[in-house]
Image (cartoon, rainbow, N blue to C red):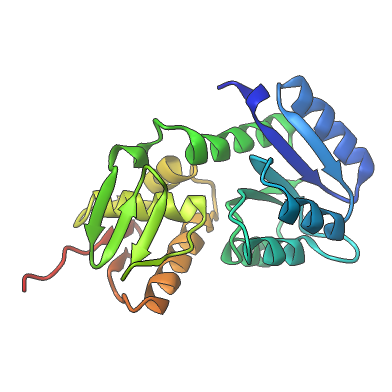
Length: 236
């Protein structure tokens, strides 16, 4: 993976930590820009599409990371990795529910951060990602095009994040099969399932909410203790 192609926006009011992470990521081949306030991050992200991933701290004075996420997600689907405090499960779930692609607890190992960034970039930009095998699919009135990474319901765009698109694509490709949370996490997020990991639950919940808003209900089944299944359409 050619890291030098990819530009990262790192947003954290801890300037010392920003400098440390930025130095490591640049040494690892990424191009990094840093900002120390939420307001500056929103302005920068709304005016530009040049960033491949945003690393965003939740706890910042003034405009918080969650506020930044809310403002950006209203207009753009730029991949966002949230940095959260250890044990801040509520903030993690809120971030995912608002459209973050993934999260990482602070203090974080710079190598782990680089790995998470690579995973996000791989799933959103790598033409060989698992979801790309299914170029076009229609099911339950949902139309997916993996080439353009677009989802339509009744000719109306379904606004999915990169992680949500990949999860829905995987479920549709294996309709009628139960897919474990572990496998979904590995396929969709390109990382192992961790203890008390709610990321995939939240991504699936958001997909359900967006489908319901488009008039499609009860097509993704939860299989208790295992994972999820896209139901086979009933014969007409």
